[in-house]
Length: 100
Image 1 (cartoon, one colour):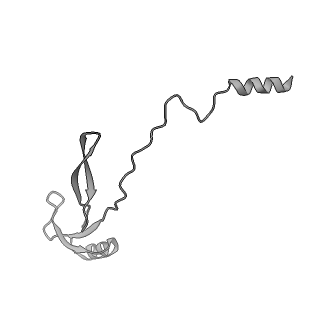
Image 2 (cartoon, helix red, strand yellow):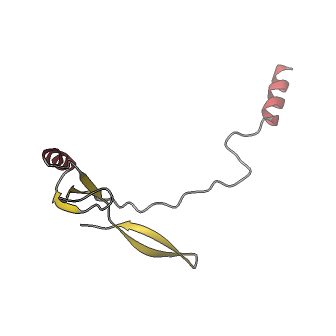
């Protein structure tokens, strides 16, 4: 009697991993690493008109040199190139990291 009830319950419960809609897979992103560049602010530069000064190699070096300077400002720069990617006959604009 108990076995019959367990079987009936198992038959009426929906499967947990099955859904009505097919599972969508994400389009793999291109594995390109962004390169961050560090610049000290040029003398006379302001938030309204930022101007890049000397480029330094690392964030740590940029922080130290900025702290030692008058204004103490650093800028980080990420550069990208806009490209068209055609998939399914329609173009899509994508950004690709620009190498130094």
